[in-house]
Amino acid sequence: MFLRIDLSWLLDLAQQEIPGDPAIFDWGALEAARARHAFRVMDVPVYEQPHHRAAALLEQLVRVPALEHSNELYGVVVAAAYLHACGQPVAVTAEEAIDLVEQVAEARIDVRQVAAVLREWSR
Image 1 (cartoon, one colour):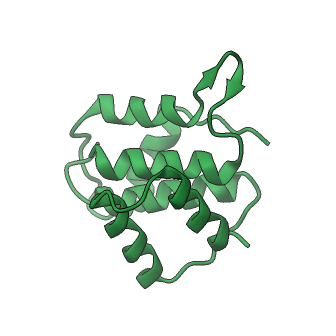
Image 2 (tube, one colour):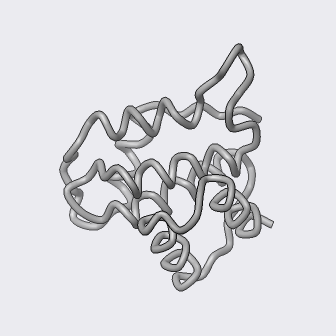
């Protein structure tokens, strides 16, 4: 299944799931995340599997903040919601999520490694 999300989907998640209903700090960052997860080269998806697309969303939203606060939480929420919408429910502890987000924020892992972690979360 190739689910393509849009800006309204991202905005709904921010409003519904992030405490304090943060304002959008950078609209371009949201659009970059939306575009990145669905990007194609010569009509071939760059991110072929749902966990790859979820990883691209998470990495983009954590490293290029879109909200006035809680961008790390937002990245995890978006990735988990994306996987769930693709029929892959996520089981993760808060500690695991925090560890992943810290690694992403500090650029210690790349999108492929994030995808591998997300795949484990959705088994």
